[in-house]
Structure formats: structure tokens, C-alpha cells
Length: 200
Image 1: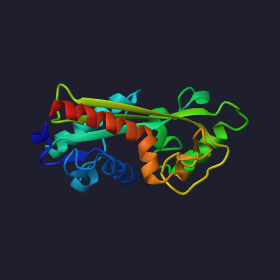
Image 2 (image 1 turned 90 degrees about the vertical axis):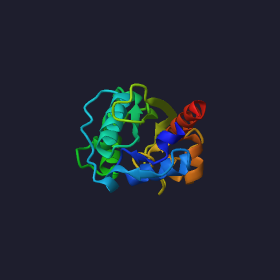
Image 3 (image 1 turned 180 degrees about the vertical axis):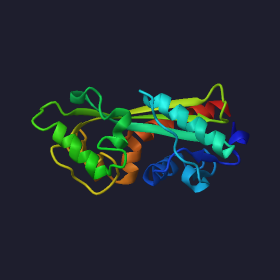
Image 4 (image 1 turned 135 degrees about the vertical axis):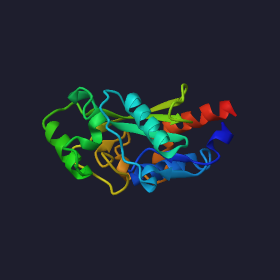
């Protein structure tokens, strides 16, 4: 596996905050990481109902476009009272070009007056060594929490200012290293690293 990753891995994302988290957590385990936007690769459609299916489609697209291994992440927030929404549409909850603040505002509006604030972040990671890789590595992570009444904190991105932990802090109030230790993406990346280690 190491020789397949020697020339680096393209990350099938244009979200610089997400790419930064991946770089912090995996270190050099995947060799050099480059975001797909740096290679002029456009994001493909994400029509699927599950995070895993979308991550697989994104990884295959990026690998085919770059001619090298690709890592894709599809992740989002699932809220119990909204039947799992925003789910795979987390980044586009309030519209195709919605900002994080727009998505957060809509989420609070939809939960107004609802006492069931349970939610979890979910992350699916797919690593393809080639576009037609018949056995991609798939890893998943989940982070339990609840939706706060008001946004708090200046860190993180996405729904982090609303994602409240058992200790009362939001994900946006955590230091980056602490978030990496307990987040859905951190869990998924460590699971991915464990699978890679078994293939060495």
C-alpha cells in the first residue's frame, strides 16, 4: 500500500477547513495531500442518499481526474427530530450556495419549540488507490451531541457553533487538537489509519 501512496493522495474536497483537519490528524500516513481544487478538479454531483455512497463517488471521480489515489470524506449533521436531516445535504441545507451561518439559522428555525435536540455528526471516508479500485478502504465515525439553543464559539466550521457536547461546550469552543481527538472525522481517520497499518 505504501508504494501506491508514495506520489501523494488527492483529497476530494474543496473545503479548506476540512482538508486542514485531515492534514492535522493523519500527518504523513497518506503521504503528501493535495486538495482537488489545487489540481483544477471540480466536485461531482452528490445525488446519493447515504454518506458512504457519496464519498465513494467523490473518491472515484477525484482519482480518475488526478490519476492518483484519492481520499474522499462525506460528512454531515443528523438531527433526530428532523428524521436525520440535514444529513447528506448538510452543506446545502439552506440552498446550493448557502453559507454556514445560513444553514445554522435554518436549523434553529426548524427546531424552534422542539425539546428533542439530539443529534450526531457522521463521517464516511473512502480511500481509492485508483478510480476502478475494487476494494476501496472505507472508514466511518460518529459523534453524539445535541443542538444548542444559540450558537457559541469561534472555532471549527459548519454546525460546530450549535453542536453541543455532554459537558455543555459546543464543538466551536474546543481547541483544534481536542476536537480532533473526539470528533466524527477524527474517529474515522484513525479507523482508516488502522486499516492502512494492517495492509503494510
